[in-house]
Length: 189
Image (cartoon, rainbow, N blue to C red; front, side, top):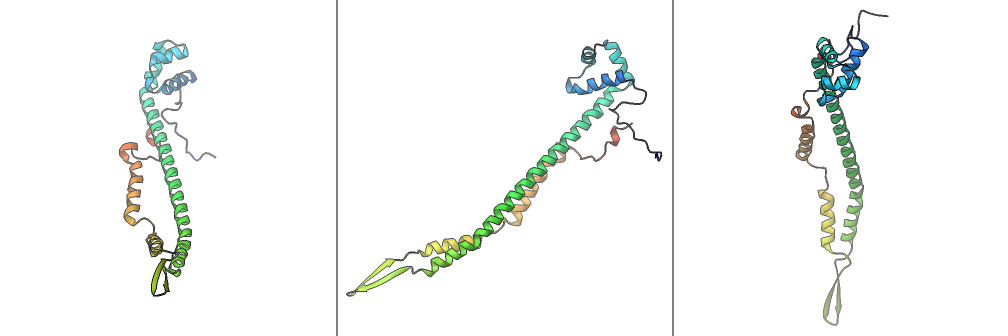
């Protein structure tokens, strides 16, 4: 069922009335990228350069090549964005695993600190008027270090999270990738 809506060809696709040979020549021209020239197309296709020039003028190859190059640039930018987002997600997942694992270790560390505090820090022996103080199995500094590690354990503060977000946003800086475009309407004729 046709509701009167017809798909418009993008400018770099085959146009109404364009012969298969002319379009094949355009495709050859487009695929050459920055090295494209009429003489190279003529050589590649075994045609006379004047024929290539006629097709180029009639079918507006310069405009079509510009639109094609922009389309490729947008596609590359989308791929770079997707890769950067996937990389950021992988890093966030790894950070979460580290955070979860560190959280799992927090309680055993606190238990260990409490065990250290339960040991006598010194053994006092009085023998014949002499008092001997022997260090205990645990040092108070060990317990303090463990307790400090447990209590200082926390997620990076909001400022650090904000800095990370800003660094991620730099990846998508418009100066690097241009304005993201959802449709190719400017390339259509």
